[in-house]
Amino acid sequence: MTATPLGFPRTVRAAGSLPLLAAPTVQGTTDRYGHARLPAGARAVDPGHVDRIAYGRFRNLYLYITNACQLRCEHCYMGERLDEAQRMSLDQSLGTLHYMRKMGSSKLTILGGEPTLHPDYETVIRAAKAMGYEQVITTSNGLDPAMRKFAIMTPDDFAYVQISLDGGSAASHDRIRGAGRFDETLANVARLAAAGFDTRLICTVNNVNAGDALDLLGIADKLGVSLVKYHVFSTIGAGSSHGGQQMAMAPREWIAFYKQLESVAGQYRTRVWYQPTFALREDLPRYADQGYYGCIGRTLDRASIFPDGRMYVCSYLFDTNLFYAQFDDGQLRVNSGDNEFDLFTRPLSRPSCGSCTAGCGGGCPAEQVVMNTSACAEDPEVVSVCRLWKADIVTRATAG
Image (tube, rainbow, N blue to C red; front, side, top):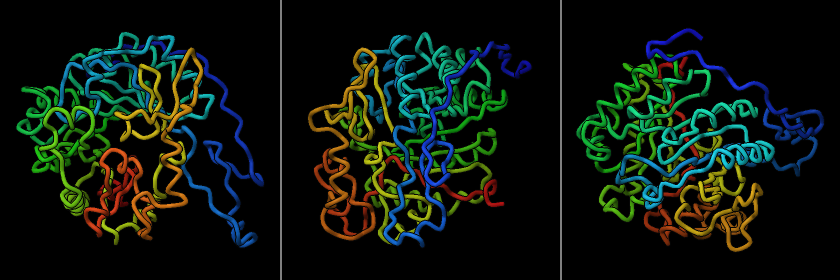
């Protein structure tokens, strides 16, 4: 790769890769992740056939290599972990990546804190590529220290880079992240996109920035980023302990926001995702058409692993002791006490929030634990949608 507008130098990629795990076959049909599929006519042959949900065990791995961060955003769910600034050693990071790759992980996101503050950040990224992870993604605050790490890497090191922009103006973003951060981040996003990195924006929507968060769509078109993702602020971690309750949006407020997002996104080129989190009952069929099958947690599709070795399936439970498993001495040990998987599978036989037939897949059991209530208990027309699932909006770039 030649030099880029950032002056990023050539780098030597790590050589070699681990062989992909053999995929199981069912009547000769498999997909690229090794999840067995029956032929299209199987339902007619066997009327008792039940389709397998299209999520896959630990396919999505979220590795928190450090808790350190130079910011203290009010909405950050990392809470006191930021002050602890704990980080994985290089050996721990590589051992975890190797183990989870053998377990079936194929899409990796490296996070923090601010992951680029880890001294072995580049090594971890390139080692994951060498191990055969099909996608290696990172999330960053996009400040100047992060750019110093990206300057010694190339676009080929990542599937894409996600940068947090919490508002469509300096007024809203800087209130959350600190004075001058909006202009600094915006300039760095432009540099990354111009250098050929597939650059994406993430916005945590709350009562501080809801008024101008949609302005990010026009900004994204000008910067040349490939996608903007919106999700609603959840009152966990620092969000619940540092005055964040005032920033939280009620379910109806969030629904109104993404309804407006859906109505205007088609005017822009940049692709748009959002996490419904809550939905009107009447909208559940269209989410099902997009591939929503209820709680992702019960399928073990995701694994989030922290520097202390705790592994969670659902990010909404990060502040609880209901972790799924613990890494000790390079081995994954399932939590023998109450854990997430027990919680998530109960709604398969009895909905977590009652006995209605809304079609939401049994409600959000994590919401019951954290909030001691459910969206439908507060508002019968509003149901919970898994916070980990994303809806896709058709824009000008995707329409044709």
